[in-house]
Image (cartoon, rainbow, N blue to C red; front, side, top):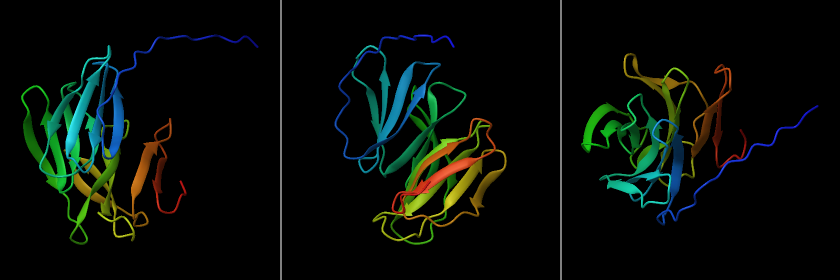
Length: 176
C-alpha cells in the first residue's frame, strides 16, 4: 500500500471574540468562512489571508447560517424564522416564520442537504427541557415539521455521504 502525503498551507487570523460562536461553514467558491455569534445576532464572513472579517448585526439571535447558490447570499436562522441575506446589498428577505411551541424559543443549528433543503432545530432559550422541534425547509415546498424526538438543544445536524441518512443530536442527551 502506498501512502500519499498531502500538504497545504493555512493562514491563521484572529477571529473576533464571540459570546457563542457557532455554525462555521466554509464556502469553497468564494474561499470564505461564515459563522454567527448566536446571542449577539452577529453574522461574520472571513476571507483567506488574515484580513479582518466582515460583520453584520441583526435584531434577534442567530442560530445558523447556510450557503446558497449565490456566493454573496446566505440563509440565516434567526430566532423567529428563516431569512435570505444578501451580503453585497445588506438586504433581507423573509422566507418563513417558524411556529414555536412556546414563548422564548429560537432557531438553533441547521444544515443543507445535497439538494439544498435546509434541516434545522428549534429550542427554548434556556435549553433545559425538550420543547424544540426539527424542521425541513425548501423554498418551493415550504416548511415541514420532521417526526423526530423533541430536543432541548438541537445540534450537529449533518448528512451521510450518500445523503440517505440524517444525523443529529440533542446536546443535553450527549447521543448522536
